[in-house]
Length: 303
Length: 276
Image 1 (spheres, helix red, strand yellow):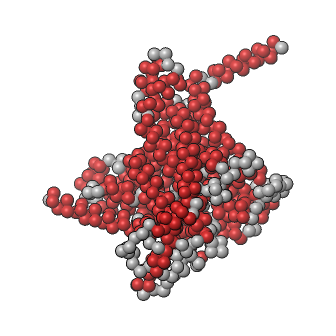
Image 2 (cartoon, chains in turn green, blue):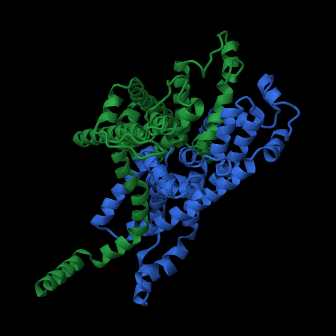
Image 3 (tube, one colour):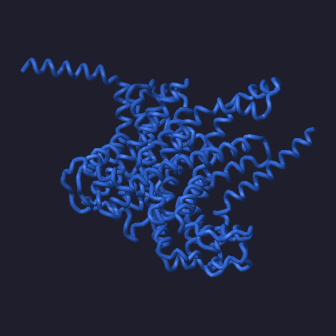
C-alpha cells in the first residue's frame, strides 16, 4: 500500500519534472490540432493498413487474407501501368514546371513597369479551382474543330483527337498539370532569387563573367537547396494528384491516364474492393517515402 | 543612357503582357464563351462576337441546382475555415513562442500531413463516417479540410505571431494575466489583419477542393460547386454554354478573394507551400 503510494508520488514528481510548465503549455496549445490529426490521419492510417490485409467491400467488413491483396497487385498489369504513369507524370511535371517557373522568375526579377501586376496575373492558373482549369482547357482540345485543331489545320496539319488517343491524352494531362503548378515554382523561386546578394553579380561582372556564367556560378548554387525541396514537394503533389487525370479523362481512354491515386479510387469506389484500394494507397505512400529518403540523403551527402 | 534603359524595360513589359495573355488564354476564352449560346461556341466562327448575352447564366440560375451547389460550397468552406483556424491559431502560437522537443516532433508531423496521400485516409474515413450518418453532410468534408488546411494555416499564423513582440505579453504576465489571458487579450487582437488573410486562404483552399468532396458528397442536394459541375461535365459535355458559365461563376469568388490576399501569398508559400 505505502509502497505503491511512494511509487505513485515518485512517478508524479518525475512526470512533473518531465512536463515543465513550457511543455505543459505547449501540449495544451497543440491539443486541438493533435486530436484532429489523430482522427483524420492517424486512426484512418492504422485502419487502412488493416484493410489492406482483408477482402472487405464498402458494404461489409472483410476477412483477413494475409498478403493476398499485395500479391494480386504485383500480377495486375493495371497496377504496373499506374505506377509507370505516376512516375512519368511526376518527372515530366517537374521538368516542365521547374523550367517554366525559373524562366519566368528570372524575367519577373528584373525591374520593369507593371511588374507587380504580372506577378499576380501569372499566378491565376494556380489559384483557379481544378474543375475550372479543366473546363477551360477541355474546350480548346475537345474535338476536331477545337481551337488547338484550328491552329494545327491552319498550319497545314491534320486534326488531332486529343481525348481519344492514349498518348495525346497523357500529353494533355501533363501539359495541364504543368500549367496548374508552375506558378508555385515561380513564386518560390522568385523569393529565393531575391535573397541573393546583388554584390555577387557585380563581382562576377567585374571579373568579366558572361551572363550565362554568372547564372551558372552565382544564381544556380544559391537556389539549388530550395530547388531540391521544391522538386520534392512537387513530386509528392503530382503523385497524389487525382483532379487532373480524373477530371480531364476519368483516367481514360482505356486506363491510359490512370495513376496510383485514380487506381486506388477505382478499386475502392467503382469495383467495391476496399482491400485492394487500401493496398494501392499504401504502396503509394511507401514509394513517396522511399523517394523522399533517398533524395534527402543524397542531398546531405553532397554537402 | 537612362532613356535607353527605360525603353528596354517597356519592351519587357510588352513581352510579359504577351506571355501573361498566352498563359491565361484558357481562362480568358472560357469567360468570353460563357456569354455566347452553345451553338455559337461549337461553331467557333470568331472568338469575340458582337451580341453577348446572359442567356447561359439565366439558364444556370433557373434550370439547374447551381445555387444550391454554391450554398453548399460556401457552408463547407466557412466551416473548414473556422475549424482549421481554431486549431491553427493555438498551434501557431505555440510554434512561435516555445521551443522544445514536442514542437520539433509536431513540426515534422505537420510537414508529413502536407505530403500525405489523402486517398489513404479517405477509404477508412468513408467507412467510419457512413454508420455515423456523416456521408452527404457538410460536416464530413469540413473535418477533412480542417486537416488538409492545417499545415499551411498553422505556418502562416505562426509567421504573424512572430512579428508581435514578446515584451507585450511579458508586460501582461507581470500585470497578473495568465498565459492564456495574455494570448487572448494581447496577442490575438494585434494579429487581426494577419488572421484575416489566413482565413481567406483557408476559405480558398476549401472552396476550390474537388477530390474529398467528390468522395463524401454523393447526392445532388449535398454537392459543392466543383462536384456538381463535374456532373454537368460528364452528362452534358456538349453544353458548352452552361458549362463555361458555371465555371466562370465558380471562379469569381476565388479571383476576388485572391486579389485581397495576393500580397501575403509569397510569405505563406515559402513558409510551407500550398497544395497544388
